[in-house]
Length: 474
Ligand code: UDP
Image (spheres, helix red, strand yellow):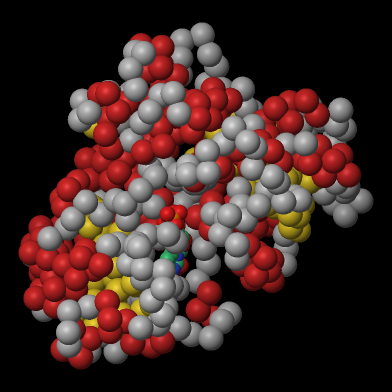
């Protein structure tokens, strides 16, 4: 009906986090297809400095969406400079005073505000203005279950997670989680980042809904535990859960100049190449890079490896790969390997039929990008919530096998040899591939018309379209 103005949904993402912005943009595009208008708001300061051109690229590729950057916020004095996560929460909180101006000036007035977990303090703004506010989790459903249940744990013990060592935490719907696998920034109960995290977890219960970039078929136990209220502190309300994923970035291969690694993959046999990539921030020590190189070489397998300069070596020229590896490594492996500096079009690589396995840091977008083409994984968690994602992936979803050396912060070359051979050549590796392909089929069904994720998205979109809230805000 062209006479009815479209309803506006505002999606609020944190700065400097591609892994949070990409899915927010994909969610926005789907809502536009459903007849809504969507503005993506990016908060605070881009802590990586490259925010301007990065955002311009995303804007150009997403013409159906509007974008708005809040003014650069000043880091509050109570936020320690060393804690990345505390800074994210702190910057979002510092941006709160700028949010009402934008929301009041938006036309039409927003029907819903959808906020990232790190922007959780914006829930207070939504409540104050009377705008129904939802969370959008760019992590797995299991992480949402843990966030909710954290309030229960907080009541049960006065100890920090750090004090619990490798004790197992039992959260409804999740496999046991060793306490020392939780994100480092919440290990110390008294740290500001822990307090921000707990505050964000509490706000989940005050929101209108929890939207998650995953689907029930991948995580049925966690979904059911949340929905039945088992993860929520008694006396608190569990908001509706909308599992609308997996949403992954579109294949950009057709829109940009094709990356050399895709042409290289064209020449490799089906399902033969091990792809190694560790998210937007993953980096290793020089010694770890040498161990990986030695292991990959000895394995005899084909591989495509995205490499960054080692930690602690900011002065090395970015493109000088030879200095990173054992002497002659690139030359000896050139018939069966390609090493790419810094960045590869990961989604397109994983979707390429030549890729037979993925060594991943377990960032949730990376996991989904592997599940959607049915690529089996070797889990090598590095930071943030990746260690818990590894537990969920290996113990619950059974879509990955761990590179055990992660726990000692050094994966030996010999483990690399054994695991990549196992993945590509063994019957058990093939079984892992079949399990991943079954998960892929179920995830695709969830996104099809009538599927669970599709239905959850339509439910949300219809609700916003038909809301009698009518765009009036306080
Ligand atoms: N990515 C990419 N090329 C790279 C490294 C990362 O395209 O060389 C993309 C990847 O496809 C994913 C995102 O960056 O969409 C990383 O998100 P994830 O949640 O996996 O990890 P994070 O970077 O947040 O730790």
